[in-house]
Length: 409
Image 1 (cartoon, one colour):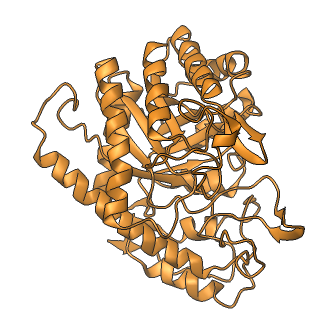
Image 2 (cartoon, one colour; image 1 turned 45 degrees about the vertical axis):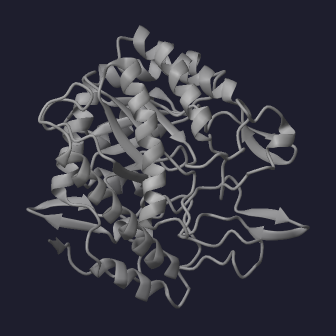
C-alpha cells in the first residue's frame, strides 16, 4: 500500500478556490508542518477490500434488502479507545441491531460513530464560561474540553493523537469482525445473504480537512480515504463548492451526507451528482436531520429530486440533531420528539416508494441522563449522569424504545 506522494504542507490541502468551513485555527502553530508530515507517511487505517465489502452491504440496504444502524458518541474521547471500551460500545450497537432485526425480519448493517469522531462543528467560535470568553470546544482532535485558555488552544499535534487513537479503535473493530465472521454460516436470514458483511464498521464526520486530506492513499490506481470506512459531511460542510465535497468526491469510500432544513433541491441535486456521478447503489447515504416539525413538509421534494436524478442512496433518519433544546441551562433532547421525527421520516419515505434504510443516532454505552424520556422523567434528572463532551446522547434503554417505535411506525 502506498501513499499518493508528498504534499506541500505549507499550503491548504484542498483545491484553490474551494472553501473549507469550520476549520481549526492552527496554520501558524510551529507543530503544524511536522504533524501534517507524520500523517502523510502514516499507514491507512482501513483497506480497499474493507471498503468494497461495506459498499456491497450498503447496496443491499439501498435495494431494500437490509437496514442500517449508525450510532455512537456525539464526540469520542481520547480516553475511551481501549479494547474493553470499544467492546462496550459495540455491544450496545449489536443489541440494538438485533432488536431491529427481530422486528423487521431484515439483516442489519452495523456502523459506529467510532474510530475518528474526534472533531465537531460549532455554531459559534467562542463560548462564555464563568464570565470568561473562550474558544469553543471542537473535539479532542482540535482542543481540550477544560474551560481554560490553555486547553482551548487549537493544537495540530492533536491530529497525530487522533490518528493513534483511531488506530487502536479500528484494530479492535477488525478483530471483532473476524470473530463474528468465524461464527456466522454462509447464509443466515438474520445475518444476510452470502457476502453481506454486517460489521461493525467505522464512520465519522470528515470535518478537519488537514487531517482527512493527508490520509488519502492510492492503491491499484484508485484513491481512498484511509481514515475511516464511511466518512460523512455535516449540514455545515455539504456545499457543492466546498473543499469537503471535493475531497470526498475524489475517493472510492462510500460517503454520507446530512440533510438539514436549509437543504434545497437544487443544491442536493448538485452535490449528489458530484459525490455519486455514476449512480452506484451503495456509494451514497443520505442522512435526514430536519426536526420533527419540518420533516413531513420538507423531505418529500428532496426525495423526489434524488430519485428523479437516478440516484439509489441509503436513506437514514437522524432524528436527534434537529430536536435539540435547552433545559435548566443544559442542551437536551426529548425522546418524544426523536421518536416523532424518526417515525415521520419513515412514513414520508414509504409514501414516496423509497426504502427507510435505518437510523443515525447519538447513543452512549452507559446509562447517561442527557436526554429527557424513559427513566429520565424530569429536568432535574439531567444532571445525574450528564457526561457527554458535546451534544446529549440517548442511553441504551431510550434507544431501544426508539427502535421499537421506529419498527412499528
